[in-house]
Image (cartoon, rainbow, N blue to C red; front, side, top):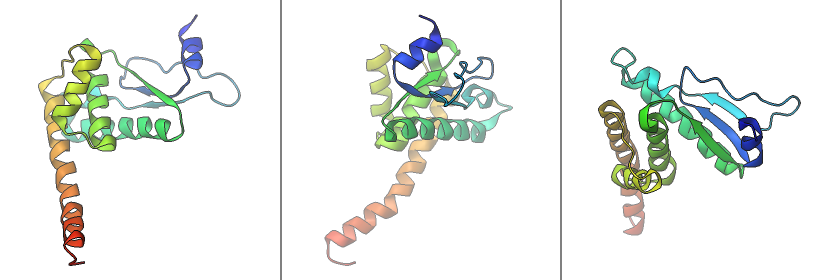
Length: 153
């Protein structure tokens, strides 16, 4: 079984390529069996790339995973960083952004699934910043729900 056949047989509908080096798997002729997107998390992980590049790549990758799930499909993340750090960061970001997990719970889920996931300090910093952003964005909504419950709205 080649890798393309394995992807097709496993029901993968979205391939998220978190690298600059790895090529996308070949898409069969005709209707594509899956969507391939490149979200090079590692490109922004260097000081030259900056946090905004990492955050944008994490957001794009998480959106692709969410889209695959909303369409009843499956996503796979391609990663060539040591220990799968980019894939781990994408998974944690997805859990935080689309499932409402706090960072600690997302990291615990990764540890349980991978038996230990090592993320760089830079990726952990981006995830912590994202957690703070998500909490700040949810805060006005939480206050509105509280006022509605109290009969103020």
